[in-house]
Image (cartoon, rainbow over all chains, first blue to last red; front, side):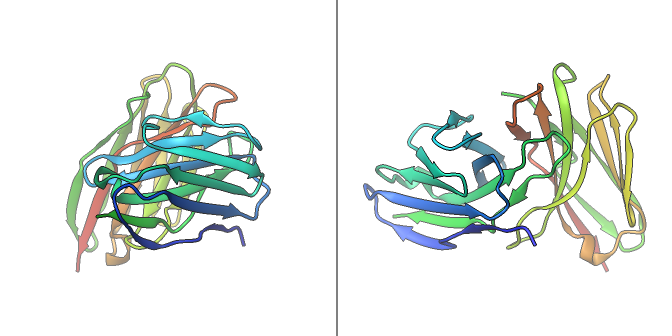
Length: 113
Length: 113
């Protein structure tokens, strides 16, 4: 059974803290994504990666960075968390083919106080 | 940024009613159209991936059609059941070799017993 695992489901962090959100997939997928989901705004792409050490900005990369040192792991980093980064973060992965489906993690709910 | 629109934003139907929603997307550089079903507190679940104009796909009581020339897809649910209550997301993948999926904001379906 395919699996995308997000290590933290619920986090509360203080403004200015550095936050790491980890995502691991066990399907040997080339492509991994980080989205955030906010009410009324849908799923918005933050960053994606199509290979180890490769990364591309999505639609809303400001305030975030990412790391892909190993194929199975894609980390989202908030260098200095702010209250407007309170959101639900969703990781996903996709094999390198147009006909494949994207597989999602269960989401990480981050509250920045 | 691709503009993927879904309508309606939300929908309430009685159990047993059939319903449909729309996803519109830019038809230029089209590569694939994805539909996902997202229940609260769960990961989005893949329903369909469609790539060819005129594609029709079916999964139980749920089916989808695709018109790439005019840039729209319909999702149909026949005989809605309470367990169909969820948010239905469509996502467009543009251009060969690019795996940046752009999601619509979703249609929230509530099926009233």
